[in-house]
Image 1 (cartoon, rainbow, N blue to C red):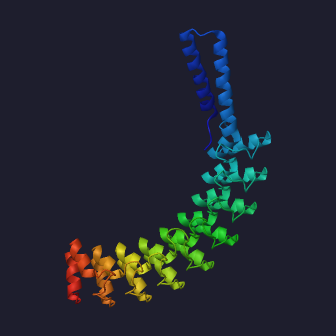
Image 2 (tube, helix red, strand yellow):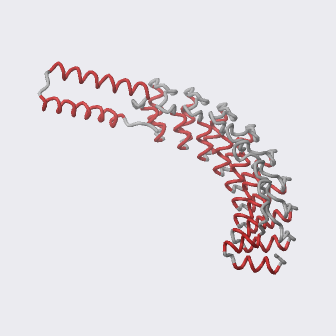
Image 3 (cartoon, rainbow, N blue to C red):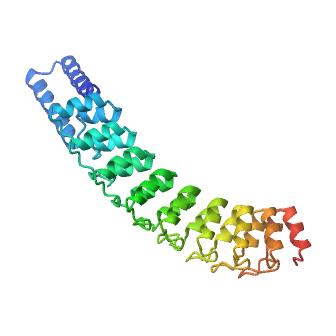
Length: 349
């Protein structure tokens, strides 16, 4: 994120030299050359000023983890809150890279612990996203806002949860992070993110902190839950943890009536299917938009092991969609011979 001063100045110098050589070849008048030099300098000066590309030694030293240089620059009154073109500060860069000693030095020099990039990210968010627990502790001790949000509603807890950093998640929860905060434009929570990625340790930590196990998304996937996300991705350990925490096994996605069992059946996750059935998932639930069942989507996709599990649990082998299509028809059209055999042996017509 930091910029090399020599590169910046070198680029400016070479740019001026190119213009000088071109002008000399064209034998332009001296006055014209001076004007062009002046315009170029003004343009570059404006750009450097506007975007903050002129390197600030403290930012570079912080990003590279050069503690001695950071301390020297702080002693010479360097601006600890100076920003790059994207709004990054020395503290953010040191936090992102996990340079704990540099972070502590900057905080001692009164670096703004809650400064934000132009996207709304803070040093705590960057450290949480990268899993730097020691840095997270230092920032929290300096009163970092544990519930600060990006302009899209992203929090440090969501970032750590999605990346699977269980130790950081526990630090944030101990600091009173809002376990049920929702991303503004989607309604996803930290629990949903961890469940979708299969981070069982994080899921358990969030549930222990009273995460809403049945929270639903609010975006175009309205009604999606943590259980649906984990089921679709085949994360059996997470599914079991969510079910143990009383996740609604028969919750339906708002738009289509999709359930966790349908999601797992479609993707062929037999272990998840068995866990959901053991938790009393409605085996014959139908999609509200077309009448399809879990057996139908498993049969259509050729997932024989899932079909066996569903049939053993008394799935209605002759159920029909709103257009009269059965699981046998779907398997036959797709050429799934083993599934066709299983369905016929179970009495499919």
